[in-house]
Length: 501
Image (cartoon, rainbow, N blue to C red; front, top):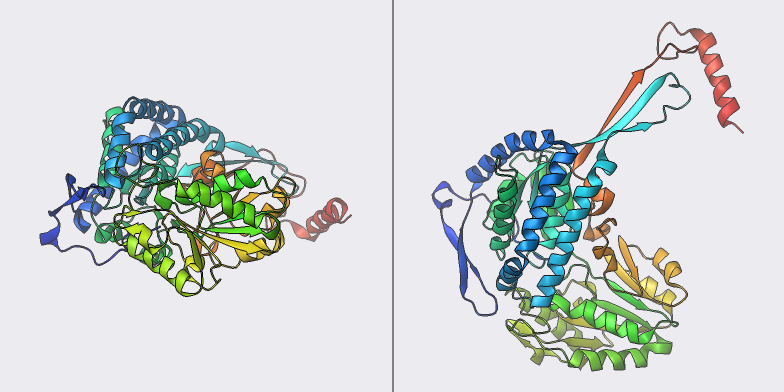
């Protein structure tokens, strides 16, 4: 994923400048938005402090009522929201509808599950503290900063926003400069159901605005974007010991085992690699196919991919490349693969006509090509023949990325999935894990750390609050200088009796 890197904060005289959000399909101006500078970002965070107290005091039931009301507002305005996403990203209408369906489902899940996941519960006190009660609850951090990407401008940041709100936090959201209107839409609709305080605020601008949010004193910063930018975000947050959740890019593999349903695997590979113009952090970029089914698989992929075309009309298979400079990355990866001996069985360099890129399927690409090692973020697939699924696993695990993966196998899916070093795996489908609200989403290695979605996603925006209470005096009390050696001998005798066998 790509996100403009944090840079030096804006000068005061630049803070009131405005910038245009553009339709990547036509270059037309959709709207103008302010460039918020450091002082404005800090002011938003300060406003959020008061709002956070109000929001936390509503309790789980009060917050759920408001979040449910927000969900209903969003559902009523889905067509408007979908049109805005299409305008700012250029994605097809169905791709935008898919994104919004997930937004609604996750918002519903977070609001409903927060009391159960985060509410106070009793904990066993153990042997030594038998005369105490123990409890645990998860409390909101306060103000959470969110820096979102442009490729899924609603679904991805809502994986942090909805869960942070359900946990009791106020949120300051900095959307991508390519999709600021989506952020403003979320802010405005939320204000309809929570008019009292600015519990959800949006700041717009470029990298300097994101940098200002990193240094604003938020209680946690959730970032989605490229790995290099994620490292800069961590460095910026380190100055104030601000904890971070970092969801970076991936080079996600799809494995086709010898016993796979090849038709389903080919369909999954083409959709997983090309939908949303290939601009998906957990989309399919590398495909490793067992030799026994390789020829059949490639034939099917070629047939399917050749039927797909990008376009600006709502019913196009997929839209343009949203960020202009990403076209250069796609072009360089395809060129490097071809220069190193790879073959294009669908498309090629001629498929790249900004802002559109037609499907490109490459085979026989060396492992050291950037088309194999680096995130392409375009409608391309690199298909590699391997001896068997075991070799596929070794190649899949060979990169520093570890976001998601896909396995197609009738009988070995669980076994192969268990060997993959990544945060998430779908068996006999593509990206199913992102559609299950109860499953955490995130990666390892260069793909980042921390989790959105699921119980882990709710707890990411809280701190654990543990309490013990003495109920009655104990026969043995080792927690005093009056304990005496006899007490400790009895304690150790109990330890040996209970735990030494």
